[in-house]
Structures are given as C-alpha cells and as structure tokens.
Length: 255
View 1 (cartoon, rainbow, N blue to C red):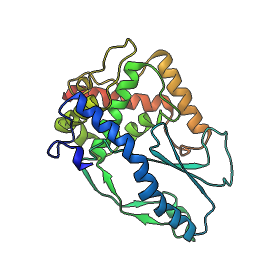
View 2 (cartoon, rainbow, N blue to C red; view 1 turned 90 degrees about the horizontal axis):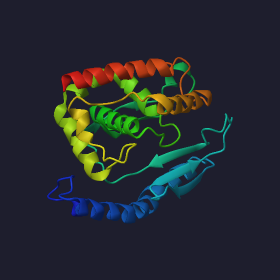
View 3 (cartoon, rainbow, N blue to C red; view 1 turned 135 degrees about the horizontal axis):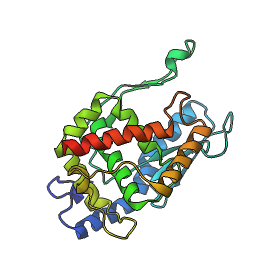
View 4 (tube, rainbow, N blue to C red; view 1 turned 180 degrees about the horizontal axis):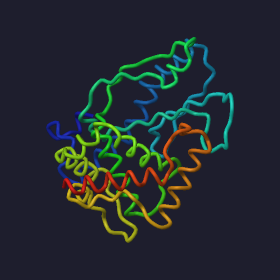
C-alpha cells in the first residue's frame, strides 16, 4: 500500500499513523484476497478437476482456506485444509527468488512433482522474525495457538544452516525487525509491562521458556508429532530447546 507509506518508509512516523495504516489494511486486504487471489486459485483448481472448497477466514478475514477431501485422517489436531495467510504490514525485506521442490520427489521416481521459484523473504529475516516471536512467548508465558512450537523447531533447523551466523551478526537487520515489531506488533509481558523488542538486539534475547509455559509448548510439539506434521527423524523437543539455548547464547554474546 504505497499510498500509506511515508516517502517509502515502512515504519510509521507515530502510533497514530500506525493505527491509520492498520485500519486501512484491515479494510482493504479481504477485498484484495477475494477479488485478486481467489479467482486465480479457483481457476487453477477447476482446470485440474480438483474437489475443494475455498473460504475466507480469520478475525481480520486475512486467510484463504482451501478445504480438500482427506485420504486419511489423523488425530484431528490438523484439519484437511491448506491455509494461506496474507498481510500488508510486513516489509518483506530483504528478499530474493528461491528454488522450491517437493521433499518427497527423490523418493518416488514414477511421479513428476511440480517445482517453483517464488519471491521469498530472506532466511536471515525469517530468523529474527521467529526469534522475536519466541522472545515474546517467553516474556508472556502463554501459548498463542496450535502449532506454535513450530517456531522453535524452525529456529533449530536454521541453526544448522549458514543463514544462522549471517543473521546473528547482522545487527542492522535485527534492529529493523525490532523497530517494525515495536510499531506494528506491540505486546505486553505476563506482568502487563510493554515488551521492549530492542532487548533482543542488546544481549537479552530469550528463546527458552520455563515452568508451565515450557510444558505447554512441549504438549503442542507432541500433538504436532502425533498427527504427522513432523518427519520421523525430527529432533525431540528437549533437543530442540538445547539448540535454542546455544542460539540464544551466541546471539547475546555477539550483541
């Protein structure tokens, strides 16, 4: 929404400007999904003769749900749907084109799987987005919904790539994420005090919850595993948190 930006700057000049932008996003985004995105998916599904049902969902009507007939059902923790989430407040920077292929493709020789080259947000930005989300969880000590433990799993996976070190040393990027979230996603901790996102850039990043909040996260992870969301050789929950301790220590040390 270029008309809402201040000379192209994605960060509003004031909280009142942020509220104006957020209200505009809530008003315009559902119509854009309905008029621009949905017809493309409808046509593609119809062309392939696939039996699905599309619907707009979410408190802000910012999700497009594709429901399909399941071949097999699990525990019910995961519905037979594909959920596309949209937003218009994130900068998406830095980004690049990235080759994507199906993980299962090498294992089934007689099936041709599709590939794609979408424009995606850089993994380094993804790291800081997820790290700040985990930090907020540790400060709030409450679960924000199903499958939330995926963020810790993703952080542990990123730690095994070259993207982690690049993200850890990129303090400018860390500051950009903190600045953006401070304006658009202000949160309060368990005591009702406003969370300072810039803590994450100054040696006070928290990734490992304790007590009841840790147990809640472990239960969510167990439900994900039971319903088949994770591959069979996926690390155990405790091992993931051990990796997150190492991530936390390295990031804070570099700060």
